[in-house]
Length: 193
Image (cartoon, rainbow, N blue to C red; front, top):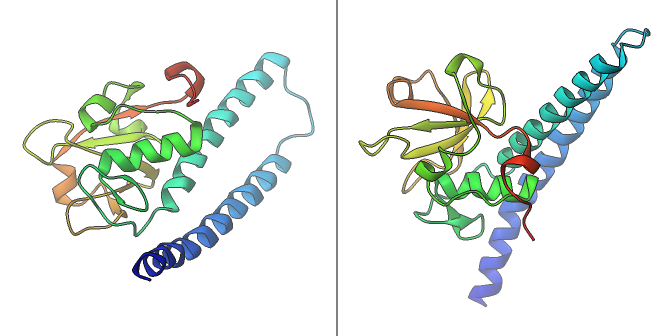
C-alpha cells in the first residue's frame, strides 16, 4: 500500500509538470511560427540560408534543454541523485536533461562536466548553456543550466528543490566560475544506445 501511495505521489507531482511543459512547448512552437512568418519574402542566398538553418537548429536544441529543465522544477535535491523519482543533485539534473533531450551521457560530476563543450563568456551566455559555480570552496563544484535574462535552473543543496535563481544575487555573482556551451550534440558525445 505504501509503494502504490508513493508511486501515486510521484505521478501527482509530475502531472502538473507535464502540463506546464506541454504548454511551454506550445508557446515556443507558436512563437517560432510567428517569427518565421515575419521573414522577408525574398529568398536569401543559399550559403546564408544554410547558416540561418544551422543557427535555428542550435537555438531549437537549446530551447529543448531549457524546456526539459523547466519540467523538473520542484524535484527534491538528493546528493548523488540521478533520477527525478529519487531526487537530483546539480550534476544529476544536468546529466538527466542532456540524456532525455539529446540522448547524451555527460560525465558524472560538475568538475568533469566543466571540460565538455566550449568556454562561453558570462556576457555571451545563451539559453541551454551550462553555468558553473564555486560553492564548496573549490572551483566548478556546482552546475546549472542558463535560461536567459540572467537566470539559471539548478538543484541547489540538501533540503532544496530544483529551482530558478538570478545570477545577479550576490551569493551567485561572487561564486561564478564560467560558462560552457554544448552546441552540437552529435559532435560532443555519441548518442545513448
